[in-house]
Image 1 (cartoon, rainbow, N blue to C red):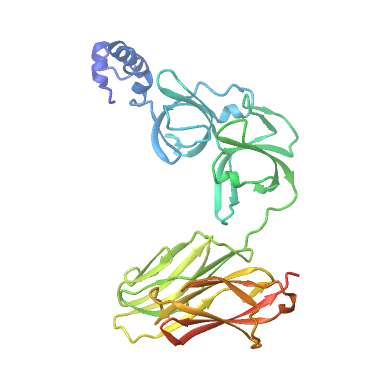
Image 2 (cartoon, rainbow, N blue to C red):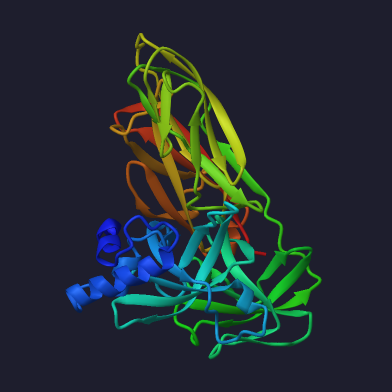
Length: 412
């Protein structure tokens, strides 16, 4: 709703007044409430006035009213300085919501967390928000780095009153939003905050619904270091206009393969080739460098795109580990390429044989199809260090094949 302020100037005999904005606003509220009785609330008037602040709540742009005269119940601690009372439309935020607000004077953006909320009778939510004074950074189970805004206080938080209980300087309390991401934080996890390391000693996810309260103590141990790696297994390729090819990429975190990495793909010349979700599409003749980036580490291949197609040139390529542990399973994948381009219409036929040509095969087939095979090594210790040859023939041409040598290893 847009307020016609000239109308209220007239009915309150203030037409032409520019200095009495506060008084004018109160009279406008009084008049419109009297005219419309309970149809419109005070909040609905304010939210359309110059008093409203533009904020971003949980990523959505909206409006609210800040009351700077009110703070939390605890007015004698460091929390008071960082706390505001926020009036906002019902249902926009919840406890744990992240609110971003850019000060109109300093133009500095601050981040807040809603730490308590109650619904007002006039149809708006009254929220206490506290300003975040740090950021927690951690890698989740998929090795994705997250930066979580947080409120750090010295000592321990009394959650029923949001008060600080002074403790040793070696202890801090950290409030963060309770989300699927933050719930991956576990006990004994070590964070780097400032110049010191802090270890999680308790996680409270019960006392305040929507917030996680982490209690931490000083720890001399440095947080674990993550060394990332990325390898594009495809070679430099010459393709043709209209071709598509899927990138085969392996990402590692401390030399352990990450199964579902989050990747960024780039093409140095999108007029020649584009790349999205790991699939290269050839657009026009020319050259391009195709890159994949994982946690700041990148790898790339050179791509040449030509106009004229050439004769078929098929190859079969088996990808997978070279060893299998006794009495365990392993899956090998295979691709059929035609002139360097994956041909998903072609499949393979699998065969197994022992390298020493003995008739009793040392591993068994659990499942297979035209693109993969799952194998299991027997539990017979006599087969340790034996080799099995896995062969994949192009289903319609036995002369096109690949062989994969698999060794059976002991667990110890």
